[in-house]
Image (cartoon, rainbow, N blue to C red; front, side):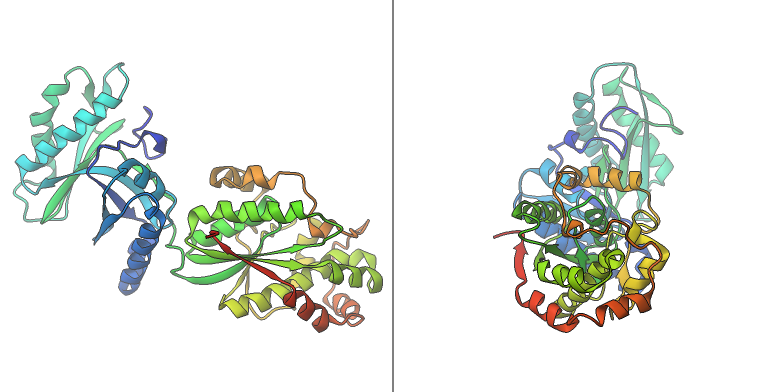
Length: 410
């Protein structure tokens, strides 16, 4: 594949001379009578995402949104690729829905495309038409040949026809009112529009896993806010700043969120002083889940999200995960549960959280860390240990001292 032509190509090569952008829906097609709600949410998210770049006019149509930026078309295109719900985005040129009008737009599109490509051997090329307007005078295959015959003479020596394995496809979408042509398609994130499913609260540790879990929850249409726990003075303020950087990096994919910062030192000290050592980490997490659930309910969130991956660390065995279930009323979503570390790292690099996550800062779970954490915890043992604590008082004190940060910061 030549650079800039395939769906995986570098968005830095977006053709900014295009008149408009075509954002195609992915699985929104499956939503039946509810599809309009998802499409409206997607368009709202699109407008919010590109507002710092340009005002846009967005028109919903069957299977896609046509976006007309007032300026900086290439930048708007790149920003659309970070909006969940678009399966692909193409810079495009509009045309009257006549054979001659489409030819004129195709000629403009191909001139821009071939001018951008480096010289070299002829490129494998084809024209592919789709007709939403079945009253158009030419069927798709005849329109393909008509456009090719009319425009390709200008580009002799730059192309070779290959209908099976094209490197460059001139796409034509025939609509009843106005048609469009394009020669670039960039793969989007797919998924569902953020906010179309509801709110969730993600426990954000500052490691590699939990930011990826938050991102995957966003991809399933969740509006994600964050909660983190800090253990000053045993863990310095640099850890809180690290978590804040990660949360801000994730704002590239949603419109707004809250970051709750919960002081956890008193809880850990109480567990250290009154509970068995091997259960400390598990008891920490049970308390975190209690606090996170209270915050989630106050926010109208319907679930918690964690970065748990089965068997990855001691607290993520089947038995220990079961010990976490009894502390909550809300469901716990674990988007990474079946993923290995390399898969998670690959996503973290792609979404821009990896570099911040690998900064070596201790998190609060390292405070009073047990020498030999329990691998097969038992719920009754957790409950027996917690009977020695003022669980409700500790939770209330932590919630009272919680700090809230609105993201993005105004």
